Figure 1 (tube, helix red, strand yellow):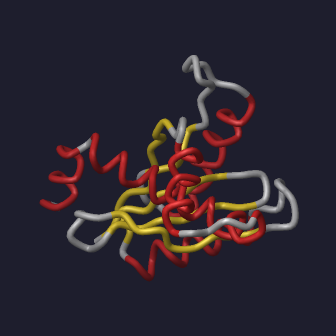
Figure 2: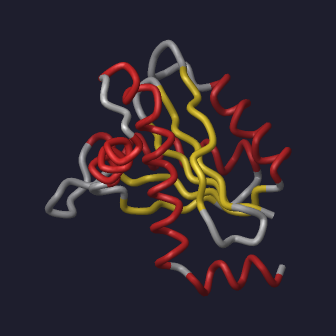
Length: 149
């Protein structure tokens, strides 16, 4: 059993997975698409990961403005969450993703990833890992409930 986090962007979706004991969060992959509306293949890829990895909960990053309000990206992320939940048949929740890109940048700095192309290759996947870790840290009762199922 695992938890998955998704960092939804206009052309990419960063994916992170917990370990089977729900103790750690690891960046997993980046799903790429040609344009924002081309989502069918992305949903299929997510569904495959959910089945293969026995994912029981999906956490989708919610891009709030710094003042906590929601903008256009938040509405798109909520709609994406709904599509993922319907397609995969697994509960999907939203989680505040403010500052996850900043933390991902700091992680890449510590790993020595300096070049723009190199960083772009990993940022969404690392941000998904941050979203998942923060969700797991802030929702211990949910982790306990999943563990007992």
